[in-house]
Image (tube, rainbow, N blue to C red; front, side):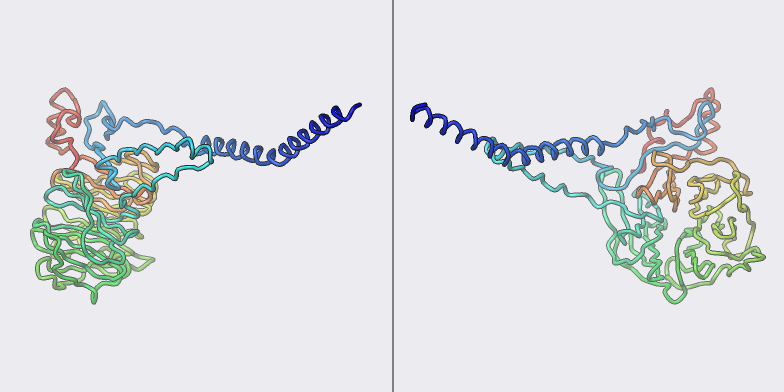
Length: 404
């Protein structure tokens, strides 16, 4: 072998050695990159949620057809996105130089709108604006369904747990932690703060527009505190703590809700006694209904309460996660809802309110939303029965629209 051949072979060995070293050096990184890409693909597949069954909310009514519908699901709200869905942004493409250098373009952080966290009490004003007291954010949300706008009531709260409005749209907010009530004008100007000396742990509020009484439910003291709705002065207490072994009529054990009917009667969810009690405008006991159980008409954890324009009484139960409907005598008429995530289902159901347009507002705390239903009155139901049993719900554009 001559010197030239030896030189060529040496050069070839040198090149081979370089390629071998390069392969040994870069193989782990290439393998790691491949493993990283495979892992990302696997995570992307795992991150995709299972497809949810589509619910035809246009037919979500109670009772089910062929019966005439008395309650119809309309909508749900939690944040601005529910009123004006966001337009997805296009991801910025990387240039060829960025791709060559292995540089990834960071995605712009999307601004998340303020959303409900733990809604408890709900109400509405004369314009149909929905008010939700949220203990998670320590704020009162206001949803304007007409202008598709979400606002927050001004004011400093620690645990706003309940809210209601009178006929003049004056706003009353109960702060359970500060054990007080804040009053605001219809323009949301602070008007008064009262009740701290009389309240221990207030949890609910209801207004009697005719007699100008403001009822505040005190869970810790197990009684109602009654205030003048115009002068904000204390008037009297209604009820007292129950004997655990013999809960007498007119006594309470951790009441959690109150509602007033058109005659000035006040209904109270006596939660740990598993019953609803009714008092007249003078604070005198009238009647009670309900008991502990799992059958229709019984309670396990009654919370919110409301009265519709026909005098029917609605009670939410956080154990059943439904709403039961009773007549004025306490007879069970209907129930709607169950545990779940779909429209018309609840998890940790809390407050309920029915406005003058027969919209039923229900706070679904675990899912941080307020669900909106429509109640069809006795008169509407009779008209529907006469019209060959067809439900009045889907046929009336005005009556089926969400509150505005």
